[in-house]
Image 1: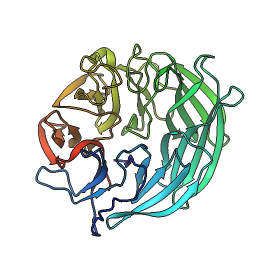
Image 2: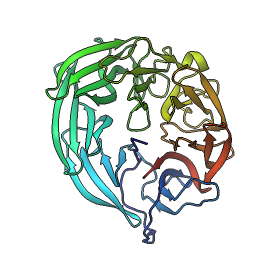
Image 3: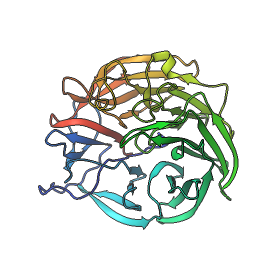
Length: 399
């Protein structure tokens, strides 16, 4: 895969009082797990995903709950982009520990979306506090080799309406020195709830000067991406065309009358193709969360089943989530016959272009990676995770 990210949920790297024996490991995969006893968390490393394999090493963490979803993996290093501390930190796995290599203080928090400009330059975008009734986004380009800020600036984006003033920065892409940003607006509806406006906006910005070139409006759906550094909502195919998904459903957008949909921005173009749209909700009758490209013009989506949950209070705990294969050319969507999954905001799909590997926490309390053969459509079992697992929040390839 061209772009391999490991994004971990954790508050600290301090291990529990029971020390893990030091050993040299060279894992291919890492899982992040919630465990059953008061939901402590741990990393689980494995050499492969075969059913006959067993995990190489499990590292317990000292915290019972993970609050942040902010870890990135690239070319042998782990990076933490913290919305809590406004510090960007670089780590490396040494033996059975993650060791701090360097850190870089940033001025902003509320990081929502990232992309890699190249192997050494990370672009991170965050919200700024409302000032003088202006909706602002702040862009950083960080050289991760030198651990320094290469460039940064504030973008002022016009409000959607007087009612919707809170900015959601969903997706970011850089092509031909144009920065492309997909965003929408929302408003709070209580302590935890929010509702999203009915429009998505696509801004094209000259990256050398941060000058706004144009804004394209999208009214067919809203809320582009989720909190994009949690799980995948965009990708580029073999031709360089950029595909992305909107997510207006109950869990991440709260404008469920509009559909979850897949859109496309063709390579070299500033504007989204208005003749292309796959209306997922119309085809399957539900919203979807997360999209993963598996090659040859196909992608995997993870969809809810609205008849199986009550509301957002039990949305994450119900065994309801299905996985489907989408043909990006024809728009056809095919259900994959896997056990129902639970949990939200999961980054649990990976492919080697022959098999799709999906980590599922099923109603039999089995936590396993399943293999889906892209050619034969056969399903087989992969590695089984420990019985102490509550659910799996990430599965990522390290090489």
